[in-house]
Amino acid sequence: MITYILCLVLFSIGLYCVLRKRNIIKIIIGIGILEYAVNLFFILVGYRTQARSPISATDQLIGHMVDPLPQAVVLTSIVIGLSATLVLIAMGIRIYERYGTFDITKINKLKG
Amino acid sequence: MERRSNRGMTFLVKTVTRLTLGFILLYGIYITFCGHVSPGGGFAGGVIVALSFIHIMLAFGKEVALKRLRAYVLRLSISLGALAFLYIIMLNFTGWCIPLNLFFSKTVPCSIFNNETTIPFCEMIVVGGGLFAIFVALVLVSKGDRDSE
Amino acid sequence: MIEINLILIFMIAAAIIAVHVKDLLSSVIAIGAAGIGLSIAFLLLKAPDLAIMQLVVEILSLIILVRGTIRKDIPFSTSGRWVFNTVSTLSFVIVFLTVAYFSLKNLPQFGNAMMKVSSAYLPKGVPEEARNVISDITLNFRSYDTLGEATVLFAAIIGVLAIARGIGHKKDIKG
Image (cartoon, rainbow over all chains, first blue to last red):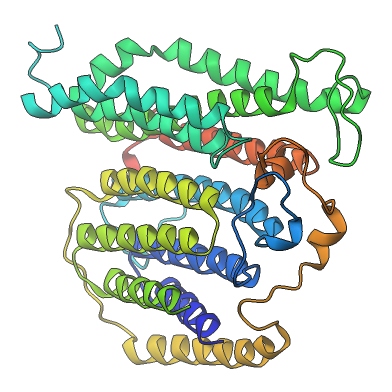
């Protein structure tokens, strides 16, 4: 139970960073922290004590393993997170070259 | 030729890069092809392959890296890998050779198109080429603008 | 399971440093520390595939984040509606934590997962040769998921190349 609460604390730190900060790089970092917390929560739900990792040897039942299905889902989620981070950084670099700042309140020219 | 150029980092970094480059590339290929037995997979191997080219680029500068892997080779590998990936996925519809499920008995007429080898290989080519292309684009973007200003 | 709590506390400390430090480069390094901690946590939670993946992806995104922030460390002002922003954000976070605490009581306790879906989808015995179950899942009955993953990656490549190209950007907006 305490592990779930620590994971939620990590999630709320990322949420605070996304909502409060005004620097674009800080917002990208906050999105990264959110992603870490959600991936970790999936794996925490699928964990079983006294179980082994899902690399199966011979005469090994599936019931003695950690739940392998959340790990296959998170494997896709990490890829999507990397792609989103790359696109966000490219947009941040472009915005810096256009406006000369990372502050989101100074970016107020909508044309172009 | 690479030793004489002054671009990039110091002599120490260049020597260590030249020694360890092949091993990093080999490790990426190993992780790709042993993904169904040991931890790893196509995406992790592809990222390691891309990181080896990024390693060249960080150590020697962008001319040496782009000479070793030219731009049209990069584009061709991404496109061919994507087409092969799509083709192998579409083979599932016809039920030719790829087992769709864990429960079915694996009857493979042409064993070249085996799932555990071809899909990670195509994924490695696509991911390695694509992530290196993204890195090259992000490096080149502000260089050109800074030169033009 | 005291180790996983320690790793989580380390990750929370790294995240707080990454959020609150002024220097952008230090912030990026701190988020790299949090990612390495996540990789160790995956290794402790018996997920070696995800540990490899997280480590490699963390290195790549750290390199690109450093490239995005280097030599752009500008002083940053935080004036203007400080009280309103902070109070609204903190109230949002408190509401989220309250709802999450009440919904956590319906989850199973940490350490005994139910495995309803896994026991329905996977066979009771593993195949004859030794193999990786996660690779079996992603390559066999979630194979279209792998195709979707490649599609998302292609969308990202096309997006970055379209954003980063030099043609079509005029500099006259600055004036």
